[in-house]
Image (cartoon, rainbow, N blue to C red):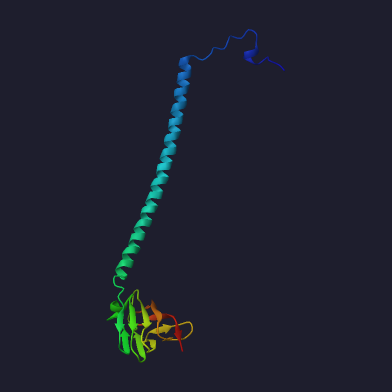
Length: 184
């Protein structure tokens, strides 16, 4: 091993001075400043991330509150509407009465409920056969009532079905979906 180019091992090199307490204090202060700068950068990045998360959470809370408001507005009255008659047409003129409500049909003879072609927006109703008269659900002129089984009468006493407006592109061609315990 050769020591020719290393000043520490050359015999006539000047001695290397040990750092003074002032040199050590300056080096420690510089390191502390770098550590503080790094911590400040980390804190700023964490704050930015926290602010982003906080704004996302706030947006989700606002959306949830909007949904709660809509549900509360739509579900202000859970009292069943008792219908003892045998024929009812639900259309734009009276849709607000039946929208989101349970219609309890109590007749002892057959009941027909016809849904008009002019209901728009969001609409659904629940129909219960609470009497012995089976309930036929039909679409008025220009409207369509759909059911996957092509069945449009309640099965019997105690049955509940739903009718949901699924579209009305022109305002005169409502399409409804009938779901629940239906039969021939």
